[in-house]
Image 1 (cartoon, helix red, strand yellow):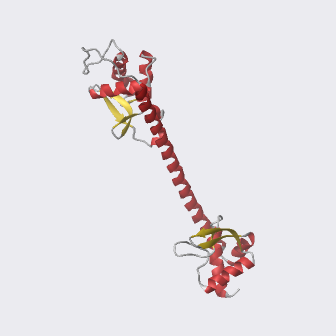
Image 2 (cartoon, helix red, strand yellow):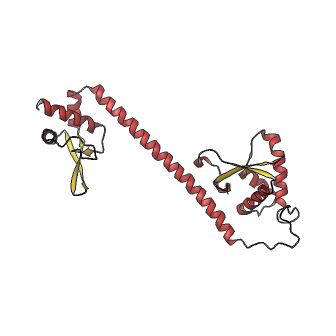
Image 3 (cartoon, helix red, strand yellow):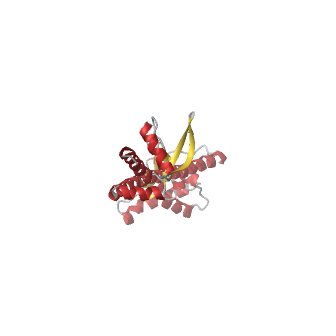
Length: 243
């Protein structure tokens, strides 16, 4: 090969060694390629294919044109290592590995966020569906919304208040997770549904009997997401007693 062609071939092989899925044989206006579109580059590309340094993987339609994708062959790698500094080839591979690792990490984070979002939406949908099928309560005329019905269906609320009042004695400054509070409420009212628990918790919050605190970590790390409570734009996961 002439010096100019040799230089173009080695540069193309350096690019190809870090792209095992193939690169376009020729670069375009908005895409990278193994060779430029010049006459000398086209001659070098033909030599690479004729001598088996590059192999065609596939052809893709890009608009009105067909783009040929090529990858390096074993013979091409041997030629690159014989003619170029192996250290430079290794550096290209390390850069490619770092790039792929970053891409994979982004994909995993995106997948985790999507999974967490899916679980939260499912929990909210279940809550809405439960309300859809729940008959409206018929309240006696003497019912007072500002006080809890200790002897009625909301008797478990009193137990929740007592439990939260004693919570900090054994848990220092930690707030009580809603799943823990729900299981405590179920001890007093075994038939208590998650929707009823959420309604009662909101009721205590509106009466300023308890504080509600949001989850502050990544969504995909929420334990038992079905028991989270949506208040405004916040995902509530903890509760504490008001002094």
